Image (tube, rainbow, N blue to C red; front, top):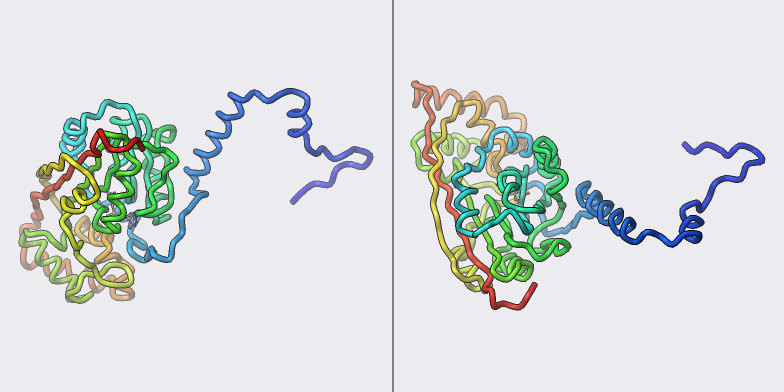
Length: 320
Ligand SMILES: C[S@@+](CC[C@H](N)C(=O)[O-])C[C@H]1O[C@@H](n2cnc3c(N)ncnc32)[C@H](O)[C@@H]1O
């Protein structure tokens, strides 16, 4: 509600404009304020990139489970990337499909500025929370948008990353867009650690069987089913013009409980909670019964593996 101006008193208008007319503006101060405003707008996602190509149901309802139950990125993984890519705590990083910000936060020591991009507003909400908790608000910008439309505002990037995310994007177009936005000699990193759907441990097979019993044998992905990437990621990167392509593996030993197994499932696109509808409690009982019966010692261990792909933009490529 606006308050009426007291009678006989002129309402104050155009104060800002009058003061600018009198004294020339301090351009340094003004540009600082504009940059701060732009960053704040970006942080608040006032510049979303909406597109009919994005299926908003892909990760709908998963964000809180993702933040709580997805295993964190081990320091062995971030350390290896930093060493191999020669990171020196300067430059900018763009994390595509940043989700709840796990990888962004894990890499924050290696860059001066980090940009996270994700189309899912709930994921970005969790990411904002993680960024605030780690006191990183001054160096992390979160943007709502989707590959292959990568944000060029903070270009050139020293590194562009896809953590558990490259399989969700249009890979050839995104690789080309990434090459364009990188510094010469900048790097791309693609990494992932599989899931209970692809897991090879016995108890993970049981988990998948129970999920399949409730949701069908085809892996769900938003409004449709999952389609394996058409080409190997190394081939995609090579075709886009990347060089010096190298692959690494890091093991990550994990221990689960029935609660965290269910929480993890609800963080995935193939078993998000909403897919079970009114049957959610019966699904949980069914899964608990199956796991208790087949693994009465209650030990759910796994040696997960992070596959990491690193590649460089050739130093001789045209400047970004
Ligand atoms: C499995 S999560 C990975 C989150 C995070 N990077 C991590 O390592 O935990 C995949 C993320 O990719 C996002 N995503 C899906 N399609 C995308 C696209 N076309 N462009 C950018 N992000 C996308 C999803 O919204 C989701 O947050």
